[in-house]
Length: 184
Image 1 (cartoon, helix red, strand yellow):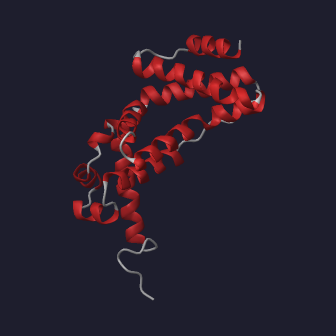
Image 2 (cartoon, rainbow, N blue to C red):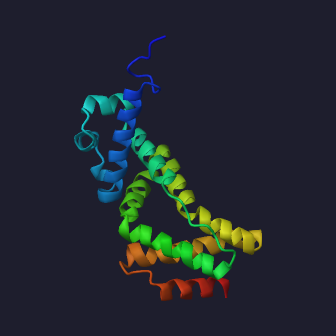
Image 3 (cartoon, rainbow, N blue to C red):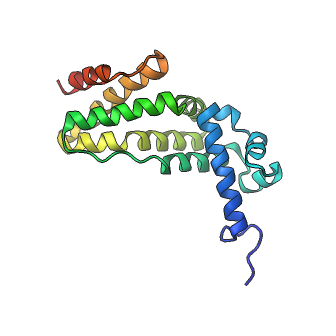
């Protein structure tokens, strides 16, 4: 049986999907959701708008696959077993992701749409889970279950506010202070 031109097992379709998703993810991280239009994704990936629309009829469809790629590419470091050291490492990496990879623009676009679009709410949740899984796992290994979610919110929230709202670096000293206050 011959593969059709829309069959995802067809190497041409797989290549097209890979290229378009890669371009979409790059645009999201560099310029945010608003810049990731079908036209810009087509231009950046080298495929026609018709091809992009054929595979991803809505912007949310396109962003879902791009965010899946971003989440799949995110690999947390291995924990050492030392609670404070691990939190410092993971929060430092989270802060770096926020400041260097333009994750704040990506989150802003997702959060803006999440209030009116269920698909965007799912994407917001996926991004949050991916960004915080390592920290959540570390806390769960060391704290009572009832303390994990509030501690996670305080740690991640402090870094998020520092980097995205205040526009300041989450320095090692800042992260140490936050960790000490939360674990106090």
